[in-house]
Image (tube, rainbow, N blue to C red; front, side, top):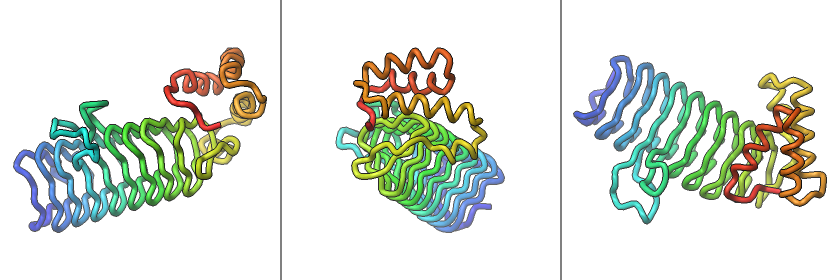
Length: 256
C-alpha cells in the first residue's frame, strides 16, 4: 500500500491499510489512522496526527511550520480528525506557542483545492472550505459552516455554526451562527435558510432564528441593547440561545 518511492520517517506510525502514493514524504512524529489514503507528492512534514478514513490528494502540504514571524522552532502540532477530504494544493500549518500550540481540523470536512488553514486555527466538523478559501491565524470555524471560493478570513475571527459565506467574501469580524454573508468587506444578508432546511431544521426553528436575526440586524437597536433583548428572547427560543452565547463570547466585533 506504500509506493517504493515514498519517503517515510522511521518514527512515523502508519496503520496497516494506509495507502501512500509515489514521491510522498511522511516526516517525524506523524501518525496516520486506518483507511486513510494519501496520493502522490503529498508532504506531511512533522508532528501531525491524521485520523481514520481521510483522503489527501496530490501536492498537499500538511503540518508545515507556521507562517508567523514569532515562530522560533518550538514544538507545535496539527491534528486532523476522520473522514475528511483534503484536495489538491491544500496547505495546513501547525500551531504556535502563542496560542493553542495545535491547529485542529475536525471530522467530515471538505477542504477544496488551494485552501489554506493557518497556525492555531480550530475548524469544526462538516464544514466546506471551497477553492482557495484562506483562514488567517487563530481563526475558529464552527460546525457546518461553508466558505465560498476565494473567501478570506482575518486572523482571530470566529465563524459561527451553519454560516454561508458567498464567493470572494472578505471577513474581518466575527460572524453570528446561521448567517448568510458576502461582499468586501462582508456584510450579513439574512439567514442560511436553505442550508438549514437541508439539515433538518424545522419551520419553527427557522422562525426562531429569523426572530433573533431581525433583533440584531433589523431593529435599529444599539448592539448592547440588542444583546440584552436577545437574552430575554432566548428564554423561550432555543436557537436564540445559540446566537446569544456566541455573541456574549465574542472578543471582536461582529459583521453588522
